[in-house]
Structure formats: structure tokens, C-alpha cells
Length: 301
Length: 316
Image (tube, rainbow over all chains, first blue to last red):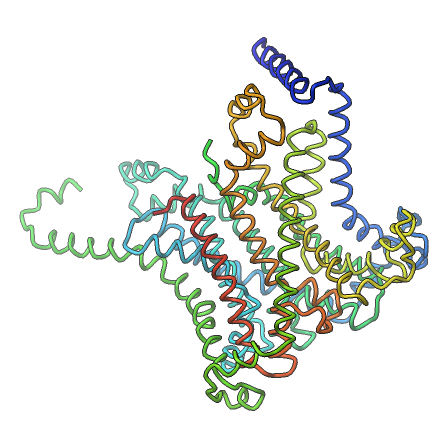
């Protein structure tokens, strides 16, 4: 009970002394803290403003959107923009396409990534390091640059403007990161758990499926969400490969909204809100896994 | 199991053990084979094909016949002699430099600020960052398009109200310099969350004793950052700079969508130029050559990134 308070007192005292030494005079600590806090609030407000603006525009009636002096709050409030967006041609088709692409891709990707994760986390073999280096490096291949050959490949396979081609490409795009992340999850489960299950009479495969597999559950969920976000957000591949409106994805639909109908900001913002909603929801679940992912262990304290 | 030991005949056991050994040796390879097949087929093979196409004259006729006409380095010569391409390269480099510098600079400042604010404010800032990070790029582009709208955009209104000039009915994209500034704003805003959260995570791992020791030795705030924090965060900065460079140099979506999918040549990035040459005017060979040049530049940056990541993950 006493220790933390004492430590805090020492720290505060030291900080105060240092402020005086460094600046040569005493700045009132409360004022300084207030300045930092206010700056923090301003940063948060500036960052969030565009998203706020999207959401309130989506809820404003048309006459409140096109005003020379903007209205800062959505009063009066309406759902018409959402109804309008959903009723537009191809919206539901494209939601369905996005869902099919993501679902099929995820099932395949989880299976393939899980095998590879187990292979690299549980076994040492020749070429393992080379394989892992490839996994990291390949994440950086710019998809933009590969559109031409991918288009030609799918063209010669008769898969242009069809969902399987897009699914295959997304699969390759999400796999490296999924393998890398899942590998970390598998490696964190002690082999001893499996071994003790085997001593108790489990087969190797049985031990794996009864012990390791359930423990990797959260890892599978995290990587699945990551894959969902990647595929749901992808634009350029879908835009180039899927030409007919009934075959496109939600992002392509959203991006061509203005082009086809002129700027109708209310429905556009409503559609953007709807597109972003599932991603934001999933992302909030996932974020604690993501933050450390790319740089885990980069600084050794 | 006890029975196996008592078996008098050793031959089948030996054979089984050998089979088991082979199986165990090959097993990990079997596990990674599907992923290798997918990555090789859908990323590596097309990369090779891209180089192959870039060495050919490949137009619409060739696309239909599935057969290009070999021109060697002709496409590269044409590209490098093209004054527009030089402009595109120059603009892409300037854009990348400005965006990466601003992203890393601002993010570091915000990360340092996060160390100073009280807990409640930190939670607020972090939530704001995560929200921005989570929003899909296509969605954010639509938002910015609306905010920068020349007629009813909120940004023109705010700038006019702040007496920064008369921005009523000001079109930001008439003047390429202003237009590119807008794109820097959009890209930096979108990149700040990831970089800030990464740098902040790194800052938390800098041992407090080191900073205290420097303070006792009389180091001021800037000196402590310059000589204690920054060197310890160097690996994180390297990774973050590499990733930002890769993302910003290859930028496509933000510009292409915001300019209603038909950007003028003033707004070409390398990726957009390559796309235009191939799918716009069906010069797939030229487009491929541009894409190859883009990949070459990015490979250099990627090598840095991979080296840093491997060094830190210590997978070797």
C-alpha cells in the first residue's frame, strides 16, 4: 500500500526538480499537464472529425447537407439516406459478392495457413528459414504491379469477371501475414502439453487435435478477422477483374458511386458508413493483436 | 505398447521405424506445400510473367492472340525517354518523401504526447486512432472527397471562417501542387494511427532508468530523446519508414478514386501510369515495364525491411 505512493512521490519530486533544472524556472505542474491533455484532445478531435462528418452527413436530410454554412449536428435526423443507398441498383448483389468472396477465401486461407504455421512452429527442417524470409518478403510485393499478368492469367483461364479468380488472388494476398501470425500462436503453446497427452495414451494426431487445436482458437479468430478486413477492403483487383455490375464487390460499388450518379453526398456517406461498419467492428476486436504484430520484440529492454 | 518390446521379430519394426523416419522428415514439407503452391502460382509466377511481358510489344491484338512480339528492352527505352514518365517519377518521389516525413514526424510527436497525458485522455486519443485505422481506404477517400468538395465542402468553409483566405468555390484540384497537398493530407491522416501506435509501443519499452540517469546527468527533454530514446527506437523507425515508403510510393486508390477514376496526367503516380498505359490505352508491354521499374525500386526498400524483421524475429 505504501510502496506505490512513495514511489510516485519520489517520481513526482524528481520530475519537478528536473523541470526546474532544465528550464531554469518552475512551471506550475498543473498547467503543464492541462496543456498536454488539451493537445491530446485536439489531436483526437482532428483525427476523428472526418469519420464524424461522414456519419452525421449520412443522417442529415438532403437540404441540410447542401448548405453553404455547414450544420454541425444531424438535427433533424433521418434514415432516408440509408434507405436510398440500399435501394440502389446492385448494392445487395455486391454485398453478396463481397460476402461470398471473403467467406470462401477465409475457409481456404485458414486451412492452408494453419498447416504452414504448424509446419514452421513445430518442426525444424532444411529451408525453414528461407521459407520464413520468403513469407515476410512476399507481403511487400505491390499488388498494383501484378495486375497485368494476373489479368492475363485469368483471361486465358476464362476466369475474368468471375469470383473464383478474385478469391484465388485474395488467398495469396492474405496468406503470408496469416501464416506469420498463426505461427506465433502455435509456437506459444508448449509442446509439453501435447507430449503429456501422448503419455496419457493419445496418439500424436489425437493430442494435436485435442490439445493444441483448441488452444490456437483465439489465433485462428484473430487471423480470420485480419483476412476478412483485407479482402473486404480490397479495391483495385476487384475493379480491374470484375467488370459487370452484378459481379462486383462492395468497394467497387462504393468507389463508382459518385461517377455514376453525380455527387449525392447523403446516400454516398450512408453507403460508406455501411461499408465501413463491419470492418470497424471486427477491427476493434482485433486491434490488440495487430499493434505488436509487425514489430514484436523490436526493442529489447 | 509393452508388447512391441517383447516382439521377437525385429524386421518389421525396423522397417516401420524407417518408414516413420521418412514420414517425419517429409511431414513438415507436406505441411508447407499448399502455401508455397499458392504463393508461387499467384504471386511469384505472375511476377516473372510481368518481366516477360515488359520485354514484348503487347497490345490488344496480342492479348487476344495470347502471343506478344519480342522487343527486348524497347519498352524500357521508350519509357525512360518519355518526359511524362520523368515527371511522374519526380512527383512520386516528392510525394513519398513529404508523406513519409510528415507521417513519421507527426506520429512520433503524438506518441510522445501519449506518454505525457493523463490516462483518460490517452484512452480517448487511442480510440480515435484505432477508429481511423479501422476505416477502409475506399470509405475514407469518399469522406475526403466530400470534405474537399468545392461547393459545399466543410474544409473550404472552415478555412474561409479562419480568415486564411477566400476558399468559397475553391477547387483544390485545379492546381496540381494544391491537389497533391490534399493527397499528402489524406495519406498522412490515414497512416498516422498505425505508425503512432507502433512507435508508442516502442516508447513504452525504453527503460525508465536510462531516461532518469540521463536527466540526473543534466540532459534536457530534446537531448534525452535524441541520445536515449531515438537510438533505442531505431529499429522501429526503420521498419515504419520502410513500410510507409512502400505504401506511399505505390499509392493508387486514394488518387484514382478521389479523382473519379479518371485522373489527369498531372496526378499520375507510377502505379496509376502503369494502369493507364495497360488498361487505358492497351499498351500492356509498356505498362508492364513501368510496373517492373516500380517493383525494382520497392525491392530495395523491402530488402531493408526484411533484414530488420528477420534480425528482430531471430528466426534463423
